[in-house]
Image 1: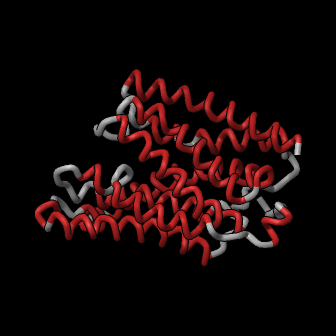
Image 2: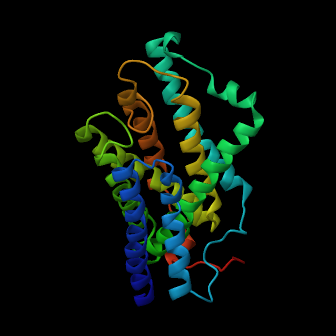
Length: 269
């Protein structure tokens, strides 16, 4: 248990130290492409901590690919994204549809492959850190429910420098910060459950990728409208409300024997 606590502290220090470099580059020098490298800071920190504390252990579970959990990782963010934007379209009408990003990308397969690759690789970088390492250790210390909550809180705090400085959205900070924190905590429960249950980081990586790609690329770039950021998307009350229902469903779940023992079988990687 002492090793677990020390590894978590070391992970957080390394993760936020590495991330601060890219916060400065993005905020002070407007180098927005550095966000792709920022998203790998949690993963790099996890790899460093593994070398320091778990050199002989196989903890990232990259070879444990369980299709049913991966499909859930894709399906859940699709559900709350498409449902919330569908409600928004019913409320606002078809006039808010300003483009067809999916059609455009399908007509340019190389661009589509590039987008998908970038979004998936960056999502994987975060999830190797957050769910592959941190949530696993939090689970050992606090169990599933507290562990998922704390991981979500830390994940939200990690985003705050860019949110507070206005690099995520132009809507007021007083609204944006609490709604984004709620989103991170709500997402943390299904992502934690799928990762712990499958003993694999892949469901969370696909969940993170699907959330980012569908909302940020396919939907936000195709749909506009007055007050849209308040209603749908990563700061939208409709999207967050549906996500909270999903969160409630997974927060009620139990991990059974895994929860009782709080142990993991080593995988090959």
